[in-house]
Amino acid sequence: MNKSALITGITGQDGAYLAAFLLNKGYRVFGFVPRRTGDSLWRLRDLKIVDSVEFAYGDVTDLSSIVRALETSHAEEIYNLAAQSFVGVSWTEPLHTAETTGVGALNVLEAIRLCNSKARFYQASTSEMFGLVRATPQDETTPFYPRSPYGVAKLFAHWATINYRESHGLHASSGILFNHESPLRGIEFVTRKVTDAAARIKRGLARELSLGNLDAKRDWGYARDYVEAMWAMLQQDVADDYVVATGVSHSVRDLCEAAFSHVGLDYRDHVVTDPAMLRPAEVSELLGNAAKARTKLRWESKVRFADLVAMMVEADLARVTSR
Image (cartoon, rainbow, N blue to C red; front, side, top):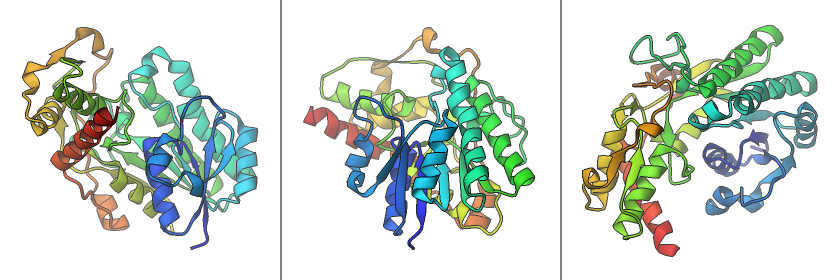
């Protein structure tokens, strides 16, 4: 295809899978990354693409570095996946979350307006914007009611994307992605906490897992499926916003049962509720209606919940065994 793409947040779960997807389509892929210590490229190494990605260094909180990255990459497609993406941390780091997750997206939009207004832009929006849900299931017309600093910051970025689309004519689309997981998910997220704990307990390396609200329900899909929807949005003649979801919700309790039963254990013998882990404002259930994405993007989720959990547990068993 000989197209070029710039991905902010390329070192995260979605960024790594998106980079692999675009490389497979023949794109020249640039990753926008901050200079920091530690191994932030492990996901790209796991997918065996780290040597195929070109890197531009900077931060979404620094407009000048984004401008330099756009000038270097000549990117025709820009995917903004950079964020402080852990909901729980957003209560203890609300300003950092607002600057990176909210204003960071605005910086990318402004850089595109200044440097290359013909480029196509994707914003990673989130189901957390629905928060205290006003209707179930949630689609593109459902009112927003975020319940965390993370959700509020993402909503700012979402509306900034719409504003730049309508005010400046940018081809700017938002994917309102519901929860999506994979073996590349960070250990701080509840899905990986559960699958890693199941693996460690099975191997005799732990005995107990502490969690917060076991009755919270989420619409969980496979991240590798979801990045295909991101790309499809930028191939449309007209920019728009799309819900990306499976249409099926499961509780954290269901997640625990699936993960522990996969290794022959009963989660009730190992999972305990810790009141200290409850969030200041809970989101009880998120359930997406992706009819618009199915119709216009020809996209649908392929991997079922049980298969996703099994995939993650197997990956964590392999990690635990190798260590």
